Length: 134
Image 1 (tube, rainbow, N blue to C red):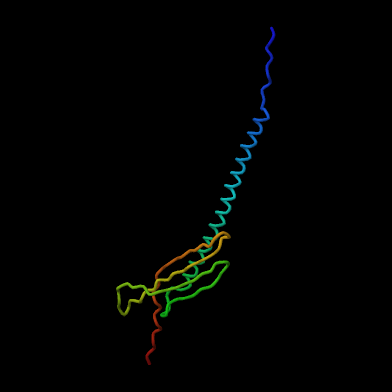
Image 2 (cartoon, rainbow, N blue to C red):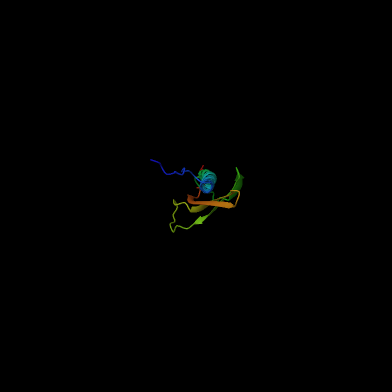
């Protein structure tokens, strides 16, 4: 009994080229995704630094001086500005301190563009020191 000639099964050169092309495209996509993730982590770290700086600036003062609070500076690559303005409440009285809206603006560059963060809160006006009667 003779067996018919069997052709050896294997991959042709064209099939190998297609497989390598698919592999190269897959690796390129994987590298792009990993690069985007690393850049995103850096952006989140800078944003978190801006939030911490803004919260730190707000925690410097519990109250606002009578003339308001205007201050600006630069810290660790962040430009910051604190501004305050009177905030109308419609409530008045000898024991009710006036309120100020305090706005903290943080600006930084992430290499591609300028980023901004603003936090706002209300703070009471600092009471004038009590005068001692003699």
